Image 1 (spheres, rainbow, N blue to C red):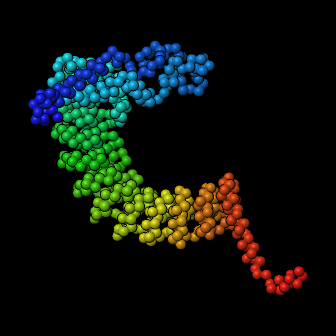
Image 2: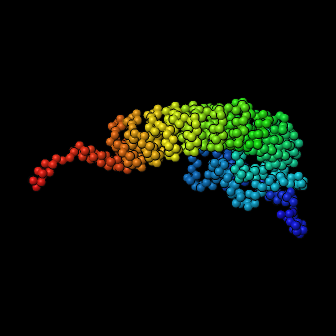
Image 3: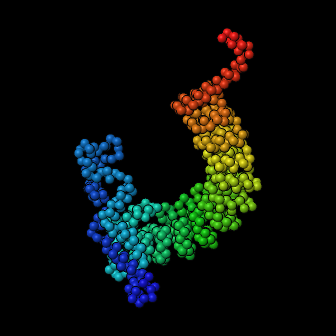
Length: 553
């Protein structure tokens, strides 16, 4: 702000950004090099079994297993009250490290800021840093000792890095990770690292973090642009995954970069870019010939699948314009991109797919589920509405188990989806599947009285229909102990006296399953039904009987 001021006095107080960054980074660096941080701060206080002291293990037998049930330490019996810190020692390592981060931040008030921001500030002023500061940075990034691991591990956990803390992280990787090209160039030129493998790993981190100048330094010094880094990712696949367009361009300009090389899970750079909706990167990759015929990953997914599942309509449109793309290609489960869009509710991508002239609207997977069945199964109400209005969609489709859209909607308790299917007369409200189950029986699966009532309201359901073992919906609901559903079925005139093949009524089943409330309710209903039956069989009393009774009295 001082630089922008029109007041000369204020302007005279201005400090340039690099100089300000240098002042702040110097303070952070000096702090992190204090004597307190020369030892491992991630060893809990009072723990004599830490990595600082390998000798501390020798008090136990060499084959000692702390997790074995027959090797209980018996600390209480010894009266030690865990003075050795064993509770912390055997705690989950990540939880322990996170606990130590909190304790360190509490004990050393400036450590949090210094550890997490020194490199950020230093990267802004590295080219003007005096030799004394550069030397201090070398000490801070030296792999020997605990100075590096202390602040780096703290940074790692505080920033929730997606990778486990690396066992080895040398100066070349630190420089690449935090975009320190001056330090990196010096380290590379002096070959202050173990092997070319470290150079490959450094390029991976530079690509992951979009440390552009560091990428240039490494490539100029012969780093392999196709090297495999953490998680089997290449520099190009990791740059594409995280949307680092400039990093991708640097790699694409390298003549030896293989744009089709696969990374994690067999996915290409195009797959990662498409799946994360990075349109400009997708365009750049396509221009460099990244699209391969049958570019499938380990799950048989192509970049188009990933773009659809991410609901990135613009990327889907771009990919569909490529002549080698087959919109009806299927994965290892036999599912097409339309099936996935319908099942996952990717509505923007769905609209693009439905406009394509070659799309198969009813393409079934290996289990016979069509896109409509998947949408109904997952309760994608708006997708179902779109599909039932689309000319050519088979609304009455069954899968290989003879289950229809209504059956699947009922199983999930997707009441709104069911209403749409009923409204558009998809049919099959009372159809039996391969297990002799109707949609009504499936509606009990999710304990959704509302779904049951909506289905019954169609007036196309035989409420007392029995399955292969003679069980009705009422008997099933009673066995589950669903009192609310039982009461609903009874209100819709479900027969409480019907018996299954074992000769048991719904009340009997409830009693055997220990559902007391359900049993008592059904017992009362059975009593009422028996009274009605007796009254009905008795019929009206003849008039002369009343006369005789009156005469006798």
